[in-house]
Image 1 (spheres, rainbow, N blue to C red):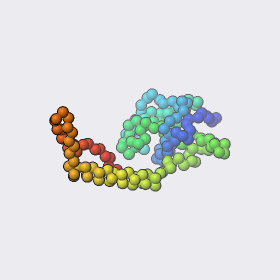
Image 2 (cartoon, helix red, strand yellow; image 1 turned 180 degrees about the vertical axis):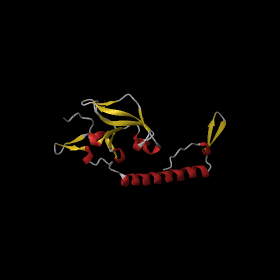
Image 3 (spheres, rainbow, N blue to C red; image 1 turned 120 degrees about the vertical axis):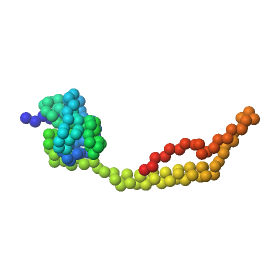
Image 4 (cartoon, one colour; image 1 turned 90 degrees about the vertical axis):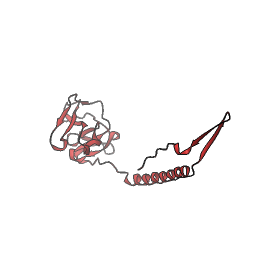
Length: 166
């Protein structure tokens, strides 16, 4: 007998972890229950990780996990829902058919080119801002404010600019 409880949808999927044979989801339906017990693995791909098991509310079977503490190389997966591909089916909207999740590639569609272009644009803007800061500082501009016959001098060297380096 097959359980057809809906666990999530394509809007919540943000990729897959091939080594864990799991789909990465930002969110799941309320039919997915998070076990309260925190477990720990000492070997395999989950070595030195703590996690909670995810259960289907329909069939009560384990369908995945949520990682909480992990080695550094898995830190990006913390607090995300990992659904085991071999345990679930996917309903394909266009064809109206069910397909084993293990037969589908859920790799995140990389926007590598767009990210590189964005990075170049940001680096160019940072250079412009750095040039402006340098001009302000090297000209040693002083602002003189007169208030009630008292002169206050404010040096631009004390201005604070915080620019992220990419």
